[in-house]
Image (cartoon, rainbow, N blue to C red; front, top):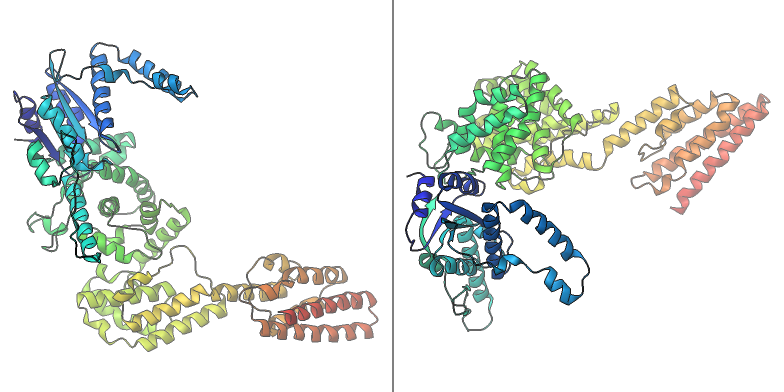
Length: 634
C-alpha cells in the first residue's frame, strides 16, 4: 500500500482502536499529502480538519483550535465562510480596543467554544489531523493525552503528524540530563527522571513516550514520498522564472531526482557510486522546501553561467543543490575563514559535490545571505584564467589537490615546490599549497612528505618583502583563510607558515607599505595634490626617505604652492603621535631630517634675497618643530 492508501484505509475504518501516526522528516511533504491528496480523495465522504500544534503552550489551546477548525468547516459547508471571516476580523479589532475588564471578557469571547464538536458533519465523517506534534511547547506526553480524549472517548478518527526522530531525540536528551543530575548530586538519595503525562483524572504519572504511544496510537506509518512526482512537479513550476531555465532543469530531472531521493541504505553500484563512498551511516535530508529553495536560488547562478559562457552547468547545479541541502540540514555552517573544510563535510554527505563548481560568492549567499557582485566578478575572472592555464604547475598552484589528476600532480609538483621555496607564489597560493599538503596526507600522496617547511617560510617572507617594496596590495575580495578551529588538522610546520601570512595580514603591514609608496610617488610627481590623496590613508611612519622627498618637493614649489604646502602638511601629520601603529622613533628622526633640510633651504633663500619664499619656509620650520615637540608628550 502507498502512504495515501494507508490513510484512506484508516479513515474508512468503522471504529478505529486508536489514532494513526504519520511520521517522516521535516519538509518531506506530510502536510501537503493530507491537505491536498487525502482531502481530494475523501471529499465526498469525509471532512479533514487540520490542527497545528506548533507553539501551543496550554492544553486548552488545543481544544480551542479544534473548536475553531470545526466551526470554520461547518460555516464553509453552509456557504457562510465569507461572513464568518469578516466577523472574525471585526472581532479581532474590537478585542484590541482598551475596554473595561468586564466588557473585554465579552468582546474576546470565542463563539466556537459553544458549538458541539461532533465526529460527523452534515453526514460526513470528521477526521482530526494534529500536525507538528514535536513543535508544540507542551510536553509531548501531555499533548498525546489530550488527543486521546478525542480518539478514545469522542470516537474521532484521529491522525497525528510528527517527526518521531525529533521526539525520541528530545526524550533521550531529557533522560541524559536526568542521569547527569544524579551523578552531580552530593547526596545518596536517587533523583527520579519524571516525564509528565496528562491523565484523565488530572494526575500526572511517570510514563515514557513509548508507553503512552502504545496506548494511544493504533499504528504508525512512515511516509514514503513519491520523489519522482514531487521533483517533476517542482521542476515544471520553475517555468514561471524562465522557460529556458525550466527546460534546462527538465534535461537534468533524473540527476535532480537522484540527488534528492538519495538515502544511506542504497547499494554501491552503477550511478550510486557517484553518491556513496563508504558504509558509514549518513543521514541526508529530504526536505521539499530545501529543494524548492535550491532550484529557485540557482536561477541567479544559472543566468550568470549562461552569460559568461560556462560549460558543465549541470555540475554547478548539483554542487549548489548539495550545498543548499547540507546548509538547510545544519551541516554546512558559516565560519570566519575559508570553506574548504566545510566543503569536505558537504562532500561526505553528497560525494557528487565538487567545490570546483561552486562560487565562493554562492557559498556566502547561502551561509550568510551576503551577495557580493565584486567578489563574483573576481571569481569569474580567476576561473577563466585557470581554464587557460594548461601547464601542470599552474593547475597545481590554483586548484584543490582533490580535483587534480595524478599525472598532472607528478608533472607540476617539482616546479611548484621550487616556486614555494623562492617566493614566487602569491599568499593565497601559499595557503592553497598548505591545504594541498593536508589533503596529500589524508589521501596518502607521497610527494608532499619531504617538503622543507623552513624553506617555504623563507619563500613566504621573501614574497612579503617583495610586496612591501612594490606596494602590491592584495585584493580583499576572496582571500583564502584557515579557521583557527581547524589548526589541529595541520602539522606545526604547516601552521607556522600559515601564521606568518596571517600575522602579516593582521598587522596591515602591506597597507602601510603601499600607502608609504603612494606618498613617495605623489610627493615627487604631484606635490600639489599629494596631501589630498594621502590625508585619509593609514600611515605608520614618516621616515628619512619621506623627509628628503618632502623637502625637495617644497623647494621646487612657487610661492603660492609654498604658502599652501605647510598648511596641508600639518593637516595630514598633526595627530601622528596618536596613531596606533606609529613608529615614533623613525618618525621623529624623519621630522628632524626634514627640519634640517628646511633650515638649509631657508639659508639658501636668504642669500638669494627671496624674502617671501624665506617667510613661507620659516613658517614650515615652526610647524615641523611643533610636530617634533608632540613626540615628547607621547
